[in-house]
Length: 211
Image (cartoon, one colour):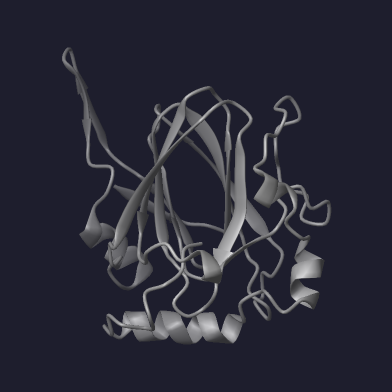
């Protein structure tokens, strides 16, 4: 498995080695040891989710309060989607920047998203499947959203794909409005949380919120 640091600090791309023969393909799509080496600490697996989306479904930008927020490992076993990580941490050197990774059933890459970062996915094909490994459980009171169509973010959504948003995501504020409302995580709080996790402390806060 090959790890690549993304432009947004706290996000990594993982590309597995694939072994093909006349029977099909075998791969290890998640390796806890290799993720821990890249990230600096193990992913505390608390919950696993799967979503199946039609072409154009746009989920995000989602994030959760820090601490504990939520780290996630995102993998696409079937179909194709654009995975976008956005730095929404107030005070971060890369605040407002983003990076997109193509996740599909060809290269079978995955993306790790650290606590405090914003995350969105766009399905590029019908019946695109996404599997999430999550560090915390579901707690709707602590989760928030930013519109993925914020013109100031200028995220690289393909022009030939009509976005389909949930009512919640369609009504989400822009990054500037979320900043003014005090919804965004502080970069200092995120850095302190990462340091605590890297030190081996398994309990950075109550297990409460998804991103």
